[in-house]
Length: 148
Length: 142
Figure 1: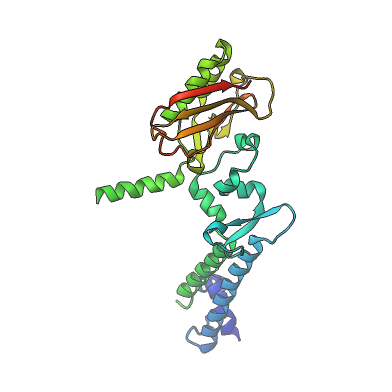
Figure 2: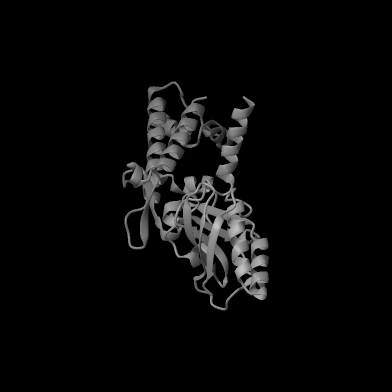
């Protein structure tokens, strides 16, 4: 059980579990045990799931005052799904989508120039994708560094 | 190889740019025409506003052209370049012309906060930006 928990913990600590154990004077763990490996896998899945879950939460849901901002536009067949966009405020939508921006009042546009295209693309990128990538990156880093 | 690198560099910089630093030949010629139709005081105010523009954003293939005088990264409106007292959106002028591509255009110059803010066209101008318009007809709306 101890090896399993440290396997999961080492992944979550991105491979710095060894250093933590040394610093706290904790006995070493058996990194070759099946329990440690099972812990690593569990830790990786948990990190990935945390990233996906965080992304889904950040993508939002339909609500009053929010609009769905597509990454791949509906006119190009993009689905209205949180895997293809986010629920955002009108201002955020307009400032990340030139097609939405056109329909804003001129007085609003005069106070709010469009950001550059890189920023627009980043804002339009589904938060689910960002969360999944962050979770996968953390899990990969943890797996690569744990057990060393 | 060098050409490919240049294209790559240009596409990266276009991703990071907010727009152009000034008006195109076409837009500048139309604004000159607007200026020519205004009284001396307003023409001078419009000229100063045009000279203060440091960001031009073209949307929808150049059908919509928005102009900003940015100061510290924020849009600024100087009272000295105000043409009318009202802050609402107001038409400054309507115009028509023939582009170098022989397409006929109609459009409107708009004021916001009493100052020049945008030009809007009924057709895309992105392929006519470097050419002077011909047969310009213009009427002032303020």
